[in-house]
Length: 92
Image (cartoon, rainbow, N blue to C red; front, side, top):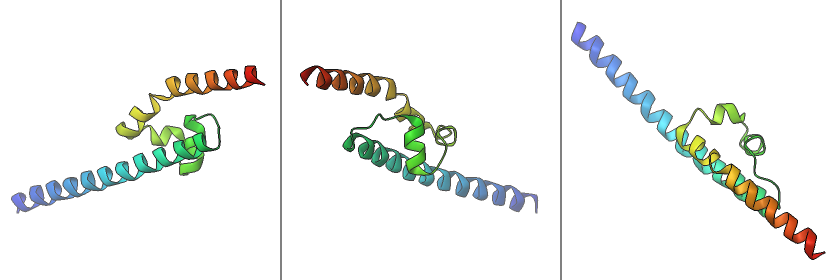
């Protein structure tokens, strides 16, 4: 009886972990697509902007380690974006 309870809990935990990993993969893809969309429209890529497109707050997205790792690259991307904007303004 006790063995069955332990097994059931283990299987439930495994199922939850698998579902979380699948959700994380979906959110990684959605985050990358949102970033591409923002870049295509020549808009600044921010956590808030990505969250609005994905439909979750940036705080909720940061709960997923792979999405958070993507967000950690934003300062570099934002610096490059701003530099490109300055160059375009100087060329005008």
